[in-house]
Amino acid sequence: MSTALAELVEAIGNACITYAQELRQQDVRAAELTLEPTADPADALGLGKRQQEMVEVLRVADDDGLTTAEICQRMADGYDTANAHMSLRGLQARRVIEEVPGKRPIHWRLAPQYRATADPYLAVAGNVRAGEWTTYGDISIAVRGDTQGARAVGRAAATLQHFPSPHRVLQSGGKIPEGWRTTDSDVPNPEVCRQRLESEGVSFDEYDRASRAQYVAWDALVERAERDLAA
Image 1 (cartoon, helix red, strand yellow):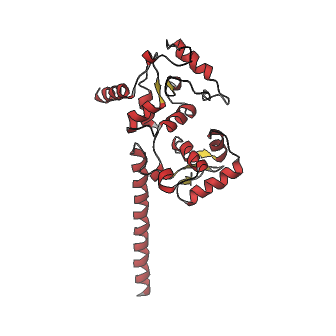
Image 2 (cartoon, one colour; image 1 turned 90 degrees about the vertical axis):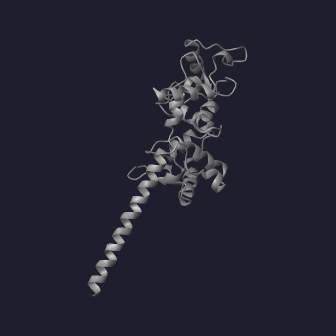
């Protein structure tokens, strides 16, 4: 009798484990297919400034994640790794981020419910042609309908080697960010951005703003994206 009961309990337990694993996989698949994460940890949890910035950095990281040192390097004012590690552990405890399995040193990424893909932003950016420019905010509006993703677009342009023509995406008003740099440079080199734009025919005024005549707004980017889908 006790053996039969034990086997029944074991079978039920194994079924529960299998079901839990399937649910987790569904969550991961849903996160991969979602244009934006299902929740925003900065809004939902009232994170501090440093932790908010860490979340922003990790928004544009791929599934391999980033090390603590890499996260510190990508934060606006830098951050020492010891304090950053403590902050990251705090985010992990609140289930905002997770360790990437099997990676050493530790790599961090957003938890599935907070994870989004940068691909939609990259697809829109790819519709900015030579001789044109747009803004981080315009790409955000084209993808999600507001400017809340502008910072994530900026980080993606600065850190992702496969971001299409990042020199064509500028600040509002056509200004090149002072901290603009190529992905292979450790120091800002905004002059390279201007050289690339000028080589494509974009002109600048006396205030170092790209010509408005060559600006492409979000609605034009949406139209191009829709044409690509229809083709």
